Image 1 (cartoon, helix red, strand yellow):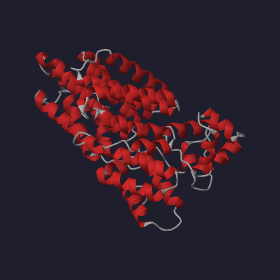
Image 2 (spheres, rainbow, N blue to C red; image 1 turned 90 degrees about the horizontal axis):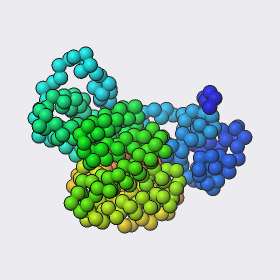
Image 3 (cartoon, helix red, strand yellow; image 1 turned 45 degrees about the vertical axis):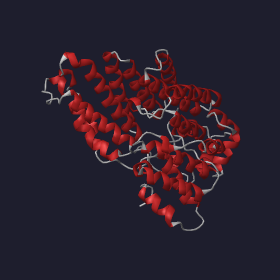
Image 4 (cartoon, rainbow, N blue to C red; image 1 turned 180 degrees about the vertical axis):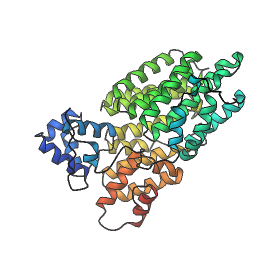
Length: 408
């Protein structure tokens, strides 16, 4: 690819910008749509402002083909957190993840007992699943410093301590992926994967693999992510029995993320087949649990059916399958999972230009988990679009956009 153009088309609509740059490249709507794996009718709707490009991977593909920067398409910087809001404390996380004091012989801190470390790691995961992201940011530097001292733990506790190390770095990778800090997310996931192999734990390997997949998807490495998710799910599933709920949950979670990956490349049949594979495991598990911090169970599978429909750009299907979701059945504390249904429904209604209904769903998500609204790229895009096309001032929408960091 040659040098990217930086000229800014002087209006706010992403669709209009795409149309101008497409014509400048001499491409028809059919040609550009084919190159990004979407239909001509979808691209036509995007250019007319009826539909939105709410997937970073598609936006990156369009920018690459049109030889422009992503910023030229969206009219603003995008290398921030997922919602465009800079999370305080990320510099401290970066510092602790990228220092290698042990290589120069510096003394490691006194490591707490293994039960105490496990409690701290569990608290990190609980706060993350409750969408207390800013709290997790501030916990991470001290916790990672302690976790890095785990090799000093006695040999008789070694396997348990290594699994705790994996769980801590999985939690770190989750947060960094959520915030869109791709380099650190990949680093944290890789450390979890390396130690998971040393721990000789299939469950730990699956947890680490899941987070590697999430980091790769966020980094737009969909093919690599999909291959790993499917291979790891198949590997773990061979060892699943009715007496191994952790393995069942980890394999199920991998099938769910593999379904998202298939949807991202618009393979509807494969996405639904993988959701069906996850549903069979959820039925075997028989409950909405949270083994290995996966939130896996029948309800989470249904939530993913809504998300996959949204990923496929099918608002009608998203609204249809959402009727089957009862988020109150989720395990206690899974506020971010509860909010996800409302986010996907907000997207679906916004695609139909039913902005009042979309706003209500966003408010519902905010009630469940305020920080989900603040640190979510799709929410930021929806709020910008709905605010731009509002025919009259809407104080509810405006105030929500301010709380989300979209407007000041």
